[in-house]
Amino acid sequence: MPFHKLLKAASASMFVLALLMASGVKAHPPRPGACSPSNRAACEYVSDLAFTDIREIRFVLVDPNRNNYRLPVLIRYPFDAPGPRPVIIWNHGGAPRAGGREGSAEWSNALARAGYIVIHPSRNLIDDPAPYQAQCNANGAPTPDGCVNWVSHSLFGPLNTDFLISRFHVMQVRFPELVGRFNNSKVAVGGWSAGTTVALANAGAWRQFTPSGPFHYQSTPTPEAFMAVAPFGPDYAGFNYAPTWNFGGFQTSSFDTIDDRPFLFVTGMGDYGPKTFPDKDVASEARTFAWQRSTAGNKFLSWAIRPSASHGTMNISDCGTAIKQIQCNAIESLGLAYFDAVLRQRQVAIDWLATDAHRLFSNGLLEFRRR
Image 1 (cartoon, one colour):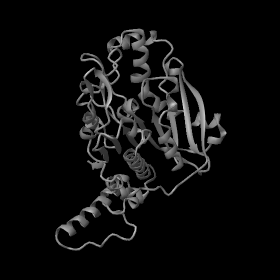
Image 2 (image 1 turned 30 degrees about the vertical axis):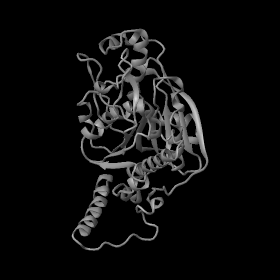
Image 3 (image 1 turned 90 degrees about the vertical axis):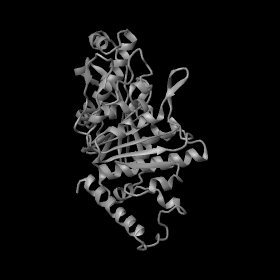
C-alpha cells in the first residue's frame, strides 16, 4: 500500500481512539512501557536497523554538460548492510564551496547507521563565469564574483540531484565496494539551511531572482521524498542575504507549486538566520511558508516552541545544553521515522508519525503538525 494510504489508515485509528475518549468510552490504559507524558523514553522512534561499520568515500565527478563542472562528493554508507539500500542526497548549508560535502555529518552518520546511503555533494564554485554572464545579468548577479556564486549555488545546486542519480552506475564501477548497494527507486533529497534550496526547488518550488527576471523551475520526478532542515523562506523576509548574487529567489507564492510528495520541515522560534540589515534577523516564522503553502498531503512540520533550539540545533549539531540535547534527540528520532516511513514503508514508522510521540519525546519543546 502506498505511504500516503498507510499513513491515512494510521491517522484514522488515532481519530477513532480520540472519539471514543471524548464520548465517555474508556480507552485501554497505556501498556507498560508505552509512550506517555510520564514515560517519554518510550516515545522515541528507534529504527530496527543499527549498523556499526560506517565508511566514507570521497571523490570528484565531472559534468561535461556544464562546462566540465567539478562536483566534489562524499558518500557515507553502512558497509555491513546488505544491498540495495535507499539513498539520501543531502545538501550542505552555507555558501558554495569545495568543502561543503563535509557538512551535516551528524545527520548522515545517524542515517547511515539506520541503513541509508547518504550522498553529500559540494556546491562547488565554477571556474569561469564568462559562459554564464548573460544569465547572471538577467538574474541580478552581474559582477564576476556574484556570477560565480549565483551559478554555483542557485543554478547548479538543484541540477546536481539528477546528475548524481544519473551517475550511480559510474560510482559503482569506480568503487567496487558500492556495487549493488544503490536502490535507484528509493531516493530522497534533504538539506540544511542554504542546502534546502535544492530540496525545495526539486520538489517543485519556483524561483525568480529579480522582479523582471526569468522564472526558474527545477523540479525533478525521481526523488520519492524531501526533507528541509531550517528551510529557506521568501526573499522579502530576509532570505536573500547575499544581495550581490541573489541567494534565495523564493517569492511568497513560490511554494504553492511544491507537489504532493512527502516533505518534512524542521524549524522553530530560535531558527534565525544571517542579518540582512543591522537591526533585522531572518524571521524564523517565515521558514514555515513552504510547509503552509505546498500541496496538502504528506507534509510534516516540527516546530520548536522555544528559542533555545538554534539554527544549528535543527542540524543536530548544536546540542550543548540539556534542553538542546532533548531537542536534538527528538529531531533525529523524527528524521529516522520519516525516512523509514517514506523510503522503507516500515509500518512502525508510519504509525509513529500518526501519533503525538514526537512532541511527547521532546517534553513538549517541539510541536508536530501535519497537513
